[in-house]
Image 1 (tube, rainbow, N blue to C red):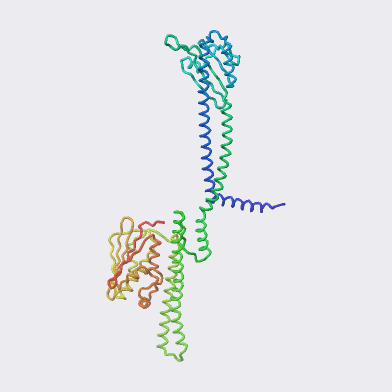
Image 2: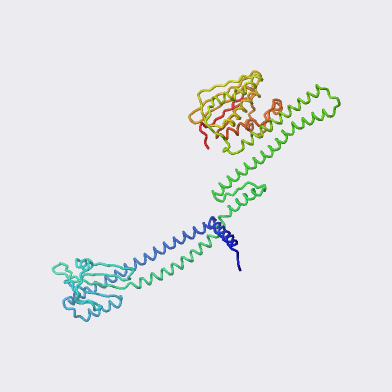
Length: 490
């Protein structure tokens, strides 16, 4: 069946995605980790066990050969074989030793001459080797070659004269260790079979265990998918492991926050609709009243048109405040941050607001404790301070005062806006920065408030990585404290 090259690419990508998905799967990694750990552990145990057997077998074999060589040494001394190597009994013993242990025996006298070789190839030759020289000093030697599978042992032939031990010759035995190698090969084979059985058992239990361990995570994924698809998901309570408990707690916090935001969004939409509809309803009522009357007096006509103009201005202010909030909701990358002289900037802001304060018969005072230069967005910072000061003026008492002060430390600068106004009830302090929230709705509408000023001010301060706090006492006044870093932190 012919498959176009383009389809081959799609099939290959799909398979690569499947492989990549499997590789990134926690279940797959748990199984692989268990198999790798069990395999390494099994191989280590096998090497330790087989290695211990080899060491023990070689040590046992060495002790056995050394014992037989000692017996041969005694027989050689008794028969004076080194001087007259003509004993049929000794030759038979040597031949039997060679056959039983599948090896070779060489006897060297004190002139380093080979007097007997069971292979019969080197008799009469001289043998000078480190092991032979060491043995003539009275110490036997042994050497095991695992690759060539043989064991070399030297044993001194000693006689006692006048309570002194003299070495008259050396027995050098070289025996095969094939039986040790064959046993190790058999052990390795059986150990490998056991290892494979253990790996398969671990694989089976790994699959079972990973499925069991991943079940709590599936519940978490299902909860997240329900939220993603728009279902009204309940809070998660998956406390099987500490990790799932932490994830559940974080998910519940996120879900709670989302519900709060959703409620806030719905309330915001409702408030916006209401706030925009109110001036329109007033204008419609005024316009209908004019249309319903014939020969409307000019004075009444002018009064109604003035009221309509005021409602249009109110509508325009709400729209402008909403647009400001939308801009504030954008990311901080929209900030045009640059070093500004905060003292001069505050002077300019207060200069624009002094006519409003004078109209309300409110004294507006500015106090600066030190020169301050900081990195801010002039427009948004101005918007924040203007809203705070304008609120302090509007919600003040007749012949009251508003005091704006500036201070700084090594890291932040602080702007305080204090007033002698009506104050804010304690139960309302946690809500004053919410959009469209009003402490006194009737009074707010009287003076033209939209309920968005403090929300705009707070958003502008937060965009500068700052914070705003409020302290208020009913009938005494309110103080807003703005803290903003001297250096903007991106």
